Structure formats: C-alpha cells, structure tokens
Figure 1 (cartoon, rainbow, N blue to C red):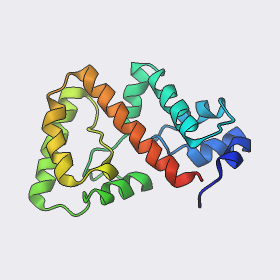
Figure 2: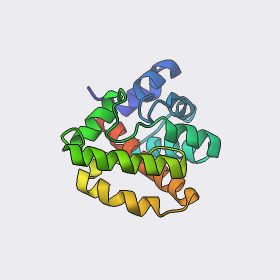
Figure 3: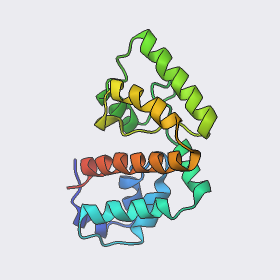
Figure 4: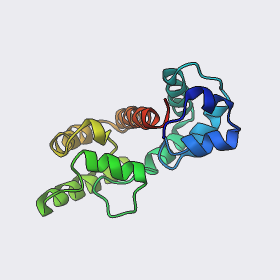
Length: 165
C-alpha cells in the first residue's frame, strides 16, 4: 500500500526510516538523513534530496553503498526489491549459457572495479544488460562509480514510486 507523501512528512524519524530504508539497498542511512530535510512538497524533491545525500557522502561511503548491491544473477539471498527487479528483467529465467556469461562478466567487473555491476534492471532486459557489461568494463573506475551511482538513483526512484502516493 502506498503512503501519501504528506503522511511520510509527519512520521517520527524511526517510522520514516522503516518505510523508506530499503529505497537504497541495505542503506537506511540515506532515508535517515533525508528525514532531516522534511517536509518534502513533491516526490521529486524527496528523491533529489536522497540522491544529493549519496553524492555528498564521500567515496568511501559511496563504495559501501555500491557493495551493498548483489551481483546480478547471484545465488545470494536478495532483498524483495532486488528479486522483483531482476525478475522484471528476465534474469530469473536464464539458460545455463546465459548464467555463465553473467557469472563471467560479474567476476571481471568486480575484479576491475571492486564493486558489483549495477544497472536499473527494470529499465532493461537481459540482452541489454549483457550488451552493457563490456561497454561499462571499458570505463575508468571514476566514470564507473559515477555510472553506478546514476543507476542506483534510477533504482531508488522506481522504489519510491512504488512506496509513495
């Protein structure tokens, strides 16, 4: 059930964080800091504030956020949000050959950059994601951190859209 933004604005910080803490994967600190900026007039303003919090958090914290995300097509236990997002991209219905491709790309990516490949799965399908891997592997680390954070912002926006009316 979606919560009206005005209601979120009036909630105690603990409840605000409870409701929005999963917007950024395993990183409720973003919602906690965003609670300090209330009230928000529009969902766009809340999202922009959360993205700005991440952008201003420093590289060490940003890397922790990136590493909170699972590898695509991973056997690790996923959050409900990540599981749904990967399913929407067709990543739960892969052939053994496709699983092998994802596994190899994930390994190469993590070895090069030190964090998992992050893409807004709901805006892509498995073919688009497989096409993106080599392009992203060719980027510099600083460019790839920026790209991954942009993808996280897209993911967060879609999660907020599901939570807030």
